[in-house]
View 1: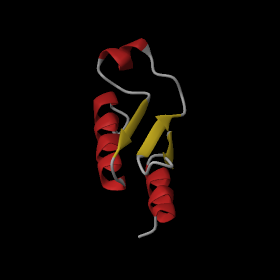
View 2: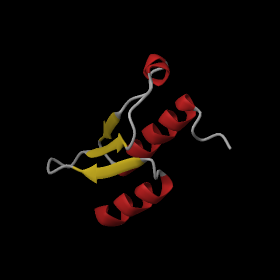
View 3: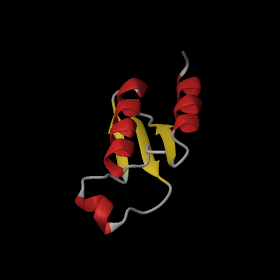
Length: 72
């Protein structure tokens, strides 16, 4: 799968994040909104990076779980 397709899929799955791939080939995500002090205190990150799209998706899922964003 092309990296453009990975970017689009992850961006659809995590609309509160901006997803990109650096020129060095690392995958990044940054939140659209600042973190609260409570979110920072529990270990939420404003920006995360990974070696590949699968690892980035795992980290994004971890961030959602940590912050409770994935709860409906």
